[in-house]
Amino acid sequence: MVVSTQPLPERDATVAEAIAFIDAARRAPARGVSLVELLSERHPWYQGKSSAATARFRGTVLAAFEELGLPDGALLYAIEELESGRTAHLVGGAARALRGLDTRERRIMPFLFKAIWNVRSADDVVAFDTGGAPDSRSPTTALEEVFRTFEWLGPNATAALRELEAMHRDDSALSAGARAALARAIAAIRDAEPVAPSSCCGADLDDETLEGEAVQTWTPGSRRSVGTLDAVAFEDQDGRVLAYGEAFRGRPTVVAFFYTRCDNPNKCSLTVTKMARLQGAISRAGLGDRLATAAITYDPGFDLPARLRSYGTQRGVQFDERNRFLRSTLGFEALREHFGLGVAFGPALVNRHRIELFILHEQGRIAVAFARLQWNVDDVLGRAAMLAAVPPDGAHAHGT
Image 1 (spheres, rainbow, N blue to C red):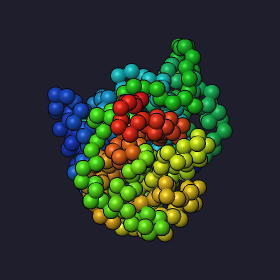
Image 2 (image 1 turned 180 degrees about the vertical axis):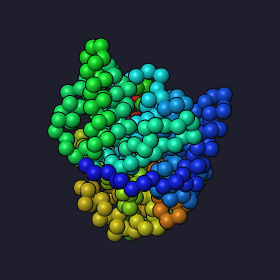
Image 3 (image 1 turned 135 degrees about the vertical axis):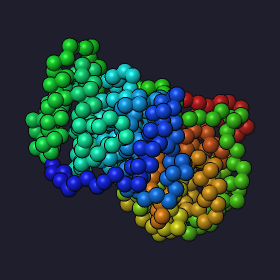
Image 4 (image 1 turned 45 degrees about the vertical axis):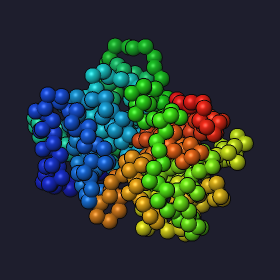
């Protein structure tokens, strides 16, 4: 493919801010750890910023972990961007971040391949000036950074060699720089000493650190209280007005968050499509009268009932009294705090959000939360079914 040949802009205020944070982290005793806080969408920095500024800031911070070392708390953010990101600056920064790992984990390969498919038609020139030593490789592109991470893996990427060779042989859409980086990766893997076979591109990353952060459960005695959410009011896809209790009490409910103006097909559109698949799986399991589903928009001012219905219907969602799309008409901030939503807002609309899905107890309390990584329909159904089997008094625990 052809990537942009326009000269990169001078360092802007957004990147300068990121570099200031990075320099502070470089001087801190726990190097890099303070930068993890900057990756949370709930950090004050993101409020009121544009989507473009947000991408430049996060990509620059992620890239800095190559030098500073990638803490456990930042790994999930890098994997998230490789799995679902569509912006060159973010994907390239995430690929660099992985090279800050202490060990060259072969299990990151599936996510590197996902990143290739995500940005292969949107690769572009990026520069990562992180305030440290001059980087002779900058500017670069997102795909070049992904292939450099394969090169960094060396012998631990042996299982990926055949697919990388096929890509180099057959993919004429790669830019010259990306093809050169891919060739270097292939050479580094070929020249490496053989290692034991490993699973590759179709496997899931089975890592306790990631799973512990991406999926969180609450025991019956510690399920998050509904509290002030009784003051939250919704309107559904048909214009029906409901209080929080009307929407979420009486049976366990699987709740996802989305908005119709999302421009990343790996996030909101895919989330809603998978909610439709989940509805089908619930029906086939004979749990249609025991489990409900709902999707709540981050953008209630824009996502009016007709738009909610159209968006869901186009993606296969079936609406009824147990399956609704909702917009808050009162109390969105209470909703945001209660669920700990990973969303930030720019001047006009959402500038950054994570993937997030919750399973609620029949009293409307959070029981399970999935965040950042793509969730699996069967896994969600299994956990929801377990919750549906718990007696109303919560006498039996559920968990991972």
